[in-house]
Image 1 (cartoon, helix red, strand yellow):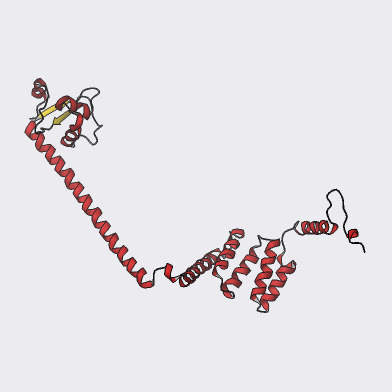
Image 2: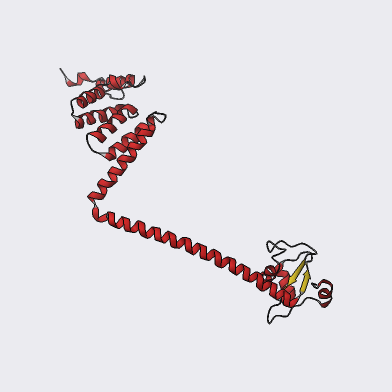
Length: 255
């Protein structure tokens, strides 16, 4: 027989055998997948029953080329790699694929546990293979102990910082009260006033707005909480002369 007679050549020069194969493959994929009807899957089961696990895995992997979304095949492969071939990385891969295609499986919780166990086994194998790249058990225990001590120190530092901040705020408030007691001056808030403007008007510089705020924490929650007509105590600052007008001092002086 002439070899050329096996092919039907048209405009696309496509061999007849390839066209028949393509149509056959298309027909197979038309309906829902039936794993047990496929020879590669059946062969995998037979090999598995005979204890030929490596060959069985190869047959199941071959079937996945035809039906990559076969959850039962991924599950079977995960079982073989876990129980018979000791390949935890492949166990994780195929069990994750199983959950991807069977997200509502009643076995999802158990599969998650198998994945976690396989990941731990793989981590131990990597650590044993490259011991120089991982700390020993005694080194890990020492690191955990150090971390616990560091956490304890950090907590103590936070407590000390909080206490110092409270003491500083209390000292500022007491200092402001002492300054006011020495001065006795009161300023009446005007339209458009801010503590910076008040500081500028009274001391000739805006930098003492914080001192005014500390002296009036009993009536001010923030520096921007000013009300027209509000009376503010003006602290005495060493070396700086207050510019509160004499008439204003007399009319608003604290008792």
